[in-house]
Structures are given as structure tokens and as C-alpha cells.
Length: 247
Image (tube, rainbow, N blue to C red; front, side):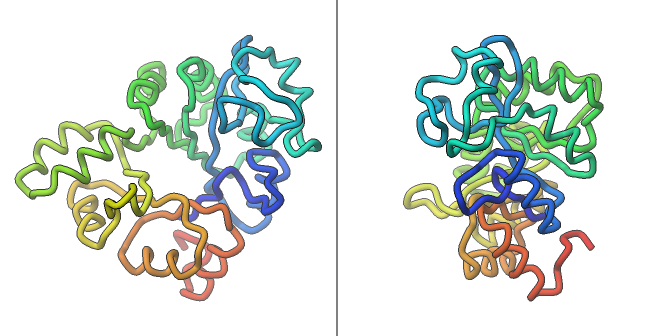
């Protein structure tokens, strides 16, 4: 699977409608985004806790109402979209959604239920409390990936004797989404890919922007790559006769 990380915008307009449209125009069906909630409970596609890095204003997002957030501009030109807008504008897209804050749990579950997105979404978070909080509010199961603790257990409990324990820890997940390295620790190797598959899990790697790294990880058997460079990943997959993904 090929995931467009916060859409596709070399200009830095991440998590905007323009970035997601660019990813779709390249043929990406898997769109990765982040969600947070405004003070009045509107679910928005935005990564950072604060507005400072990518917008024309500063301060935490969570203290602002939607009326205020909607007047904020990413890169000075693009507005912050509601997640509901993304789901409606791209009805054939699949969404990988990272729940960034506790106050986004209830609104995300509400959007999933209201728009019947159960088959179009993978819920993820570094926090398994947030991830499981969303799942508990849904009328039927959706795909999800392990949080930080589950991913760490997968990497650190290394022997095959630990597989039974890992299956209990990872009983409610479908995949592991991890970086190739965590500091000096190599997380993704052919051996860990094989182990994930033995446990019935997919393994997705983030964020991979170099074509040589993409090719090496694909050769190792990973199931998905998350990238800022949707154009580069498409080129790598085309050269391997693997575009579109899942063909």
C-alpha cells in the first residue's frame, strides 16, 4: 500500500485540501492524516498541537473554536479542513487517521458513524487509550494499528516463544506502523517483517522519502510505505510494475 503522508505538497501545505487533491491526482487511494478537535468539538485535519509551525497564527489549536480555526491559513493561503470534508470530497479514498488528542476521540467516532466510514478507515495513534477509545464507540469494527506500547513490545519481545504473548497484546490490531529505525534500534528488518506476517499483521513504514530506501524496504517485504514524496513513491512502484498498488 502507498500512503500519501498528509497529502502531497512539496511546498509545505500539509493536511490541506490542495495537498490531498494532489495526492489523488497522482493516483493515491490511501491518504494519511491527523485529527484534532476544536474547543467546540469540530474534528479537523491537523498534525501539531500548536498552530505556530505551519499557519499564520500561533498558540494551541484546542483552545480555539471552529470559527477561529477556519479563519487560520496554512502557509498563509490554505485553510485547515474538517475531516468530514475530506471524507466527503474523496469518496473513493481510504483514510489512515492518527488520533492526536483525547478530545478528538468522540468527534472521530461520530464522523465514522455518521458517514459510515467503517470500511474506509484505519484508526491509529501513539496512544492505545485514544485508539481503543474510538473503537469502543463504533457500531462495528474498523481496522486499526498498534500504539507505541504494542509496537515496542513487538520489537523488544524478540523470541518466537513470545508470539503467544504478543498475540494477546496485539489482539485488536491489524497492522504495525513504525519507523525503520528508532534511534539506534533497527525496527524494520526482513526478520521483523516475517514475524509480523507470522502474527497475521501487516507492517507499514513511515516516513520514507528516499527512492533507495523505498526499494530496499519493498524488497524486505513490507506491506506499506508512508511518504511525503508521493511522486517519488509512485515512480519507484511504476518501475517495479507495481502501480497502481494492489493491482
